Length: 79
Image (tube, rainbow, N blue to C red; front, side, top):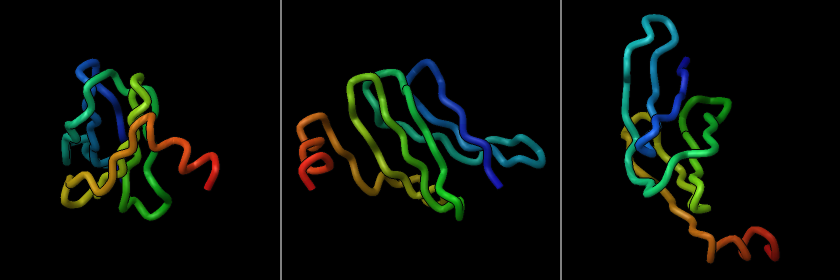
């Protein structure tokens, strides 16, 4: 299991819950993070920053799978 936290520099950090060791650092946002969540299977991390950018990350590889900006939000609203 993982524990996710945010840093002042816009990064998210994943730690192992047993030893509290850093497993991975997720970098790529230009502003402070305001939201983060791990899915129920601990495969993916979702982060959002104060500039309304949302990113979907693969926890194992650390790769950003998708990035959505404020301009993309109409896709979610109008579907």
